[in-house]
Length: 241
Image (cartoon, rainbow, N blue to C red):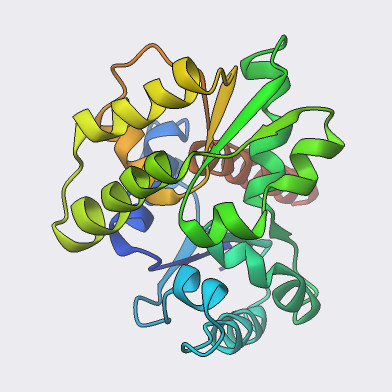
């Protein structure tokens, strides 16, 4: 198989399923052969990223993420996508372990804000405590000229409950809780656009999109970029044959 990409997922599995669904739904198709070629690595047993980021005495997922990149690089994919925001904490080590590109979801999500909301100035970030507190998004937000708005402890706690209790533990989205954290980011903290910096939040957006708030959905943007690159690779191959 040529011109395929690798989805590094399983963090969590429901969010990875949502990402694959987006890829298939958004790819222009009229037959089976129009769908994209990709491998899904659902490495669900990788230790929790946020837990380790906040407490280095906990199991470190970094070596397993690097090992996955090394293992699947031997198949020569066109590129990798990493469907976990918190896992981008380990991006430098992962990128150093391969000669294949790894798309950077936080960077893409910030770059897309200029299209989503051209007048935006204050950008909120929602995600796991590990993502929010270690500033995985911060550099990209400030470099783009925006003001960073972090959630209050109360909003972060509600977001954490949505991610870990509702979705990861119960396997369901709580639309009211999802809409409420978005409302509080926009109305209470005056965010112009809020980044969904966790793929479980992207799953919530997929299932409960009926709200009026401006968001930058990192996983959705990553899916669009993956489709664009995969189709370009297919076109290049066709032109050379």
